[in-house]
Length: 331
Ligand code: CP
Image (spheres, rainbow, N blue to C red):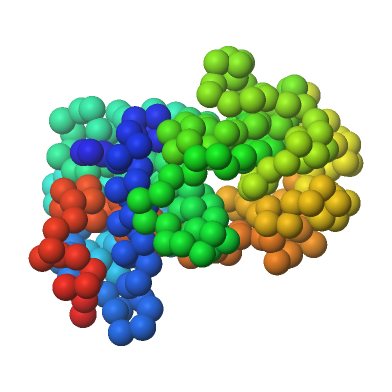
């Protein structure tokens, strides 16, 4: 694996390698293991053309926990606002010696563009491109699900996939790179996925995706789900005609207090509630659901650091070996 651009490109082995490495990385920052020297002397650039809280800070924390030098670049306040192109920006990063570029861009395909040109010879990690993909989000979601179910089973999660798990992803699928990355990765890991959305918030061609599609959130819950992932309504990307009223949306497709109570009624005592963040509380998810004992929303954020450490580590070192494993090289 040279770059991390899309979950559609990931084999089952690639995905399990990242998740298993993330399990090792999760030990860093805890107990006596504070930091690894694995990426000492390497430079990681966070190149963000769109706003971010979780992804940017967790990539920064991940790179620092691996002892890399980190440069944070935000398009706002840079020469991009003077019209500098992606090519010139990439060549500037090459000139300062970037070994890895973590890119978030409003244009779908921008990370692929960087990876497939000779503008820069660095590992490229997609931190969210337009409405296309957000692969590290899907990996941290899978990591969170895997850990939850391993805990229920009283087993370790290393090496296991998500076979037999039922995942529902509900909301603004049309604009969601998180949904796309999750559908492909969850399918690769053996889970079954149901997308639930208003017809106007489903993309053309969704019938060809490897998942079920429903317009009815209550019916999906009644059938049983192990993980309920709510998506943010991305008002900034949509035309008003796409969107029902906020009240109707919340009533039909929001995970509200009544649906939270319905999980118990349907005997779904172990179902978790997920959201990639940022949330529109009261629209796609109620505060009671977001803050409930079933919610894994903050676990997802914590797990994002471990998963991004694993991705940086595997891309920049080529894999795990005894010399650099977490148990041998901690500082
Ligand atoms: N989930 C996610 O990508 O959040 P940010 O936009 O805050 O990075």
